[in-house]
Length: 305
Image (cartoon, rainbow, N blue to C red; front, side, top):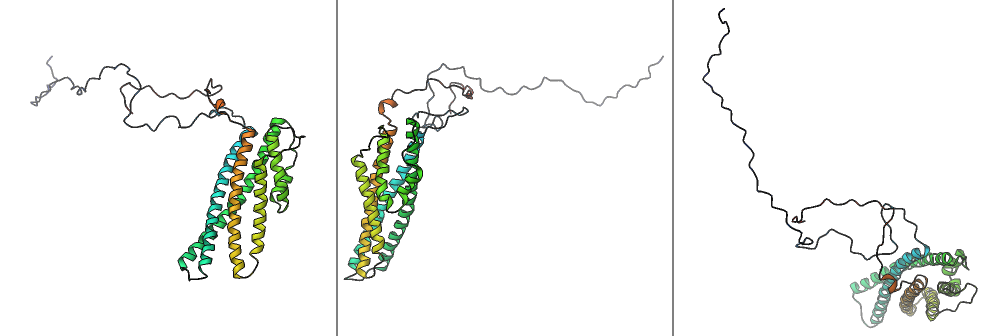
């Protein structure tokens, strides 16, 4: 039987099979170098642990942290109170200088005319310093009251006893005019007495620092009262005297703030002394009940950051 299949016609094209072209090979990997020590950097790295000293006690993220004890809380609030007292003393010094400058201008105005810009600058400095001093002083007194309550709570926690005075009596002894001249000294004396570790039934014996602070407190209150009453008088000489009295009052406030700084530091050191030998030789022995930290991937020894 004849073959009836059609043969493909020739088109004149031919196909040649060649192997695929392989990608160009890169540089050969260098052999692993031996370890030569920690990596070096051209500049101090910005990563790593924070540049702070070890604090004890501390907390570990991811664990249940106990609340700070009252001693720790009064220590923290006492540090903030010291900052407020330093700001108060600085503003009192500026206010004293502003009042003295105003008094000098008043004396010079008796013989010659004054420059208007100088007078306006003096008035602006006096007003701004006085307003800021009043605001910061009120905040400082409120912070002092809270700090005294924290100290009383710390003493009650350590001794297991109730404080001899209630909170409202302390508030009256600090905020009621006239009454605070008499009760502020005994309140501070009792605070120092209990912080020193003496019995609550024993009679307090205030230190010289407490007596000096009490005298400055009373003197400051008397000067504020006299200055306010003197400003109600009429006359040029009365106004000049009121400026001088205001400068003396601001100077007394500066002295009171400085003595309060010393007193707060004294009570804090009595309640929670931090001796230098207690801070030496402390290290982390173990961390319990903490999640395992996420480790960084290992890098090659010759890699640079």
